Image (tube, rainbow, N blue to C red; front, top):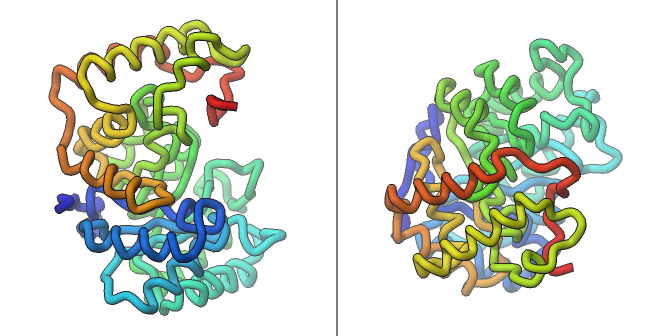
Length: 320
């Protein structure tokens, strides 16, 4: 069975592997398959699911399954992106958005309510007081907590530095960080993870496989690189592939076990479409953190390209 870790100051005990909501939505699979994945996740000891209105119909998919399943999942959802057009400065709109999420989930409350990408003001301008990170959304979060619609509040972000300042306010219980902490991308190590640890925030790591870039070996793309693949990144991928072959561990397993080798991380999200993918990831996590000698070599590989090269896409278009 999966081990559990404390989710920071929330005190919640979450499974080391959690289920990400995007791939149980219509984006990833059909409802019958999603229902089967959710049920199997509970059987395997997964007790935390993260969803969002922005993840297609993930809330209603989960709500339908949980209405027929006796399972005590810890649930987090978010404010942001939906309904459209989204109005981040309209408090009545935000209240209705929370109400809609709870209705979709067929629940009176969730365990964690997060702001979705508060670190990308070009997408959603949340703050009326940008210095103190205050705005209508903070009033809605406080109301949700006071009215027992959410037990805890959090941040769900995709940057490494902007979100650090928001986390440093101490106003949030949980941090979900995506794309900034994985085998080859480690910018969260510089300030974000230390800040979360200092504030006793639970840390949820999303996209440990970098939107599929670390899901398998893309030998052709790496050996005959596209224009966007910089020579240092090409060299880094070749060395990583050689390391994986030498140690006999595939990239998905390395990716998951690497993230969980950091004791500051509470749980890592897995986005799966099938029971087979889920079972494979659970088995990988159950094998535990990586040994120190492997972590040292992986750090040396990561240090080849310590920061994202200029013009490198956020999602690497391997296989296209």
